[in-house]
Structures are given as structure tokens and as C-alpha cells.
Image (cartoon, rainbow, N blue to C red):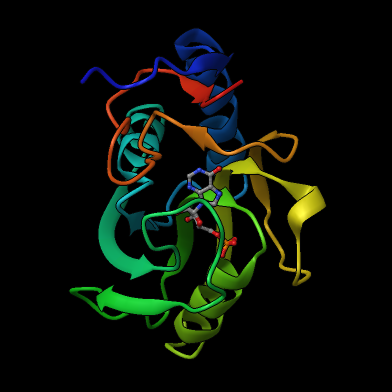
Length: 175
Ligand code: IMP
């Protein structure tokens, strides 16, 4: 059975242009001679990270962490579980968490708390998408790509039941 084709909310071109802007903003905020360590949250942020770092012509390092906050459905369980930890420590580093979307904020606030405890020099967060109307926790996100309305979105790394991550755009199911 073929899957439903999502309706485009943000085109590949809009995403590319906005990420170029975000990359410039992040780069500007750190001295040229300092490294930026990007911590991408799997799986959803893998394409965002790939495009973000290619738009940052400076020294960056990357690491990955995997957490799970949703089951196979589209609503949050409110529970965050760590599935894969980082390979290296964060002590004295300029850390930027790279996340696909901030929805209730529960996942990010959990991540910020555990990463902050590892004593980075600075800790900031970049999210491609934000759904402000869904927030349950007032979590600080310094870099936001797009603020969107409360719709379940897929594509560009984001999934529904592990599908649609490969779409080059962000779309809405059952639009
Ligand atoms: P939060 O903890 O409620 O902020 O949820 C964050 C996580 O839920 C994200 O990292 C996504 O994995 C997932 N998520 C939230 N909204 C969506 C959506 O619209 N599409 C796909 N995944 C989503």
C-alpha cells in the first residue's frame, strides 16, 4: 500500500534558506577562534545537522544522542528515555543542542538539564521547528528555524511511525 503524500508546509528551498540564516546567526555568536560542538538529537535532527554544519564555514565538531519521547503515535507520552549517550564529554566546550522540533518542551528541558550538568562552557539550543502553542514547559531555545501551528508534521528527518524521514520538505499528514 502506498503511503499518503503529505501536503507541503515548508519547501526544501525555504528550509535551505532558513538554515543558511541560522548557521550565520550561530557562527556570529561565537568568537572565530572557538570551536562549536554540535550535539544532534537522533533520529529527527540528522538532516538538519547535516545541512546546518555544511552552512557553517568554521571549526565544528559533532556528537549524537538518541532519546525517545513518542511511541508510534502522534501524541507525547511525557516520558523521555535516553537510548544513546554522547561519545565524549562536554567540559569547557561551546555546546549547541541541535533538535528537530520543540513541541511540549519536555524532551528539550530534560536534555538541557543533563547536558548542563556536564559543565559545558556555554549551552545553547537550535531547533528547526517550534510549536509554541503546545508548550508545557518554558524551555529556552536560542535559535528557532520556523514557528509553526499545532499540526503533526513529517519529512526532513521527522517521522510518523518511522516513515517519511526522507522527504526533502516538511509536510502535514491528513491536511
Ligand atoms: P516534546 O518533548 O513534546 O517537545 O517533543 C519533542 C519530540 O517529539 C521531537 O523531538 C519529535 O521527535 C517529536 N515530535 C513532536 N512534534 C512532532 C511532529 O509534529 N512530527 C514529528 N515528531 C514530532
